[in-house]
Length: 426
Ligand SMILES: C[S@@+](CC[C@H](N)C(=O)[O-])C[C@H]1O[C@@H](n2cnc3c(N)ncnc32)[C@H](O)[C@@H]1O
Image (cartoon, rainbow, N blue to C red):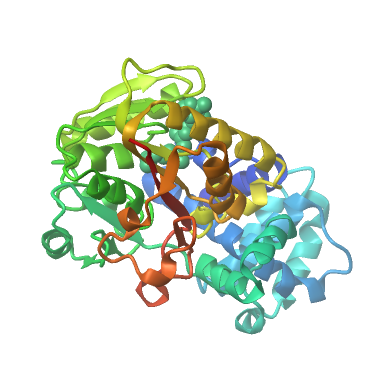
C-alpha cells in the first residue's frame, strides 16, 4: 500500500515537470491529468502544484544557501514543493521530507539526489521564508513590463500575484447586492460579487439554476461597457468575436442583445453551449476562424476579446510565467492586428467596437489601439463608454481603460486587462 499523502504529491510533481520542463499550461493538463485520483487528492494535487509554481522563486531563494550547485529541474521541483508545503501550508517537516525523499527514489532523474534532498530539507531554514523577497516575474516578462509601467508598479503587481485571486461571480439579473446576500459574498462597485477563492463553485446557491457565472471583475467590464454603449442593447446585433468559454457572450445575451458567439476552438465552443444551457441564455454559436469567416450582415457592435499572452491572469494562473518565454508574443500581436482589421470591416457605420485583452503588455493593448486608429481613419475613441459604474477615473488612459492586478488591493485585486471602445463613423 502506498503511504497516505503520496499520491497527490506524485501527481503534483508530474504536473510541475510538465509546466516547468515541457512548457505546458495547467489549463491544458487539468482536470484530465488527475482524473484517476479521488476528489480530495485531486484538489490537493492541484493546490500543491499551483502554490509551488506561485512561490517557486521564493523557495529557490530559501534553498540556495544549502545547495552547492543548481540541481536538475525534477530535483529542484521536488525541493520547491517540500519547502512550500512546510512554509506555506505549515506542514510538519518530518512528513514532508519523508514524502519528498520517497518520491525522489521513484524516478531515474531524482533518485541520485534523494540523499541530498533529505539533508537539505532537514537543514533548510523555514523561518527565513517571511524574510525572503516576494517572487519576481521572469526577466523576459519583467523587462517589457518595467519599460511600460516602471519598477514600483511591477513590484506592486508581483505582490498581487503572490496574494492570489478571489472568486468573482457575475449575476445574470445584474443584482449584485441580492446575489452577494444569497451566496455570502460581497457586491463589488462594478457589479460583480466576490467570494473567498476556497468557495466550492458547484455547491453555491444558484449554480444549477444558472443565476450567475464565474468571471473576474475586470473580465466583466468590457461587455458591461459595450452593453451600456449600445443603449439600448435589446435586439442589437452583436458579435462576440472570440467568445469561448462564453463569459462575455452570457453578459451580452443577458443584456438583451442578439449575440453571435464565434470562436475557433471546437472544444472551447462546447463550453459556450454548456454555459448558455445552464444559464438559459441564447446566442447563435459559430465555430470558425475569425480570419476566414464572413458574416451575412454587418453588426451594431463587436466585442473583440482577442487571444493574447494572458499575462493579466498570472495571479490565478501562476503556471504561465514558468511555461512560457515570450517567444509567442510577436505572433499574438500580428493576430490581434488582423482581427481588429476584420472587426472594423464587419461593423455597421456608427457601430461600436470594444477591444480587450487580459494582458499587461502595452503592445497588446494601448499600442494596438494607437496603430488601429492610424490604419482606420473611420474610427474614433469613445472613452465615455468605459466609464461604467465602479470604474475609477485613474484607471483611464489615453487609449482606453488600463486595469492591473494591484488595483483594489484592499478588496483582493483584479485581473490585468486593457479595454478600448471605438466608434466607426456613421
Ligand atoms: C481570451 S479568450 C476569449 C474569452 C471569452 N471572450 C470569454 O470571456 O469567455 C480568446 C479566444 O480566442 C479564440 N481564438 C483564437 N484564435 C482565433 C481565431 N483565429 N478565430 C476565432 N477565435 C480565435 C480562442 O479559442 C479563445 O477561446
